[in-house]
Image (cartoon, rainbow, N blue to C red; front, side, top):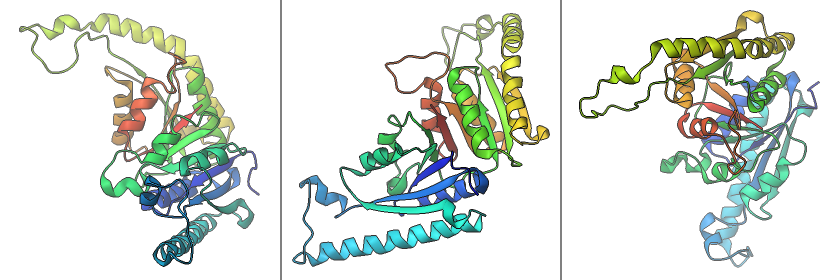
Length: 320
């Protein structure tokens, strides 16, 4: 039986992106660790109708609109059943996968947000949804929900990421520890691979490839000081990183599948994490919503914000 403490909401709109997101979850999260709710909001009319009317009426006198509504219902029903079978084929029990389709009540994003408060551990969306055919980096529904989901792990899935290798951006903060806790709970007792990675930014004062009056760039680089700083950070973070590693091992992840790594020399922590993920085949990047520098006026820290913008082909987990 599935662990009822992990309840996963997957928002589906019939798009390839949302279907790929569901397929990714079926492979990334072992069946015994979660219950799945496949959720979709059905609209009464195409988006263009909502531009001029808060509640466009569908009647028998509007055959074209009724035909559109019926076709949408047919597509959603088929999509939900195909995705449900995908989870069953991945080993999920019948009673662990629920389909929930409802008519639009307030707005699609707000309806998903309202549903998300019903005891979910994680909320899953495709990066772009139906917007993928117009080349936008993030769909409007995903963009609206990203700053709102603070009560669950927000999972944004791009394209079809590799589902068995997870890279955690770890800085010892409360957010990073939440990321460890969230991932541990959802992949426990499996053979997934985890890299707990800390990025120490460079002390190099100059960034970019510009010529500042023939300035010697070596004068802005401090290798001795960086080495000393690295040793200080390693000494401070090593116990925290080792504790995080031990938690995964205690959760049933093989010790040889849990790696720790410290990277230095980058100016951008987000770019470093993304480069590490691309170079070593990590399909998932897991981060806390906020790191060490907590600024309450902002809904998300700099690293999390940049990762959501840059990691277009990966799954990004944001733990709050």
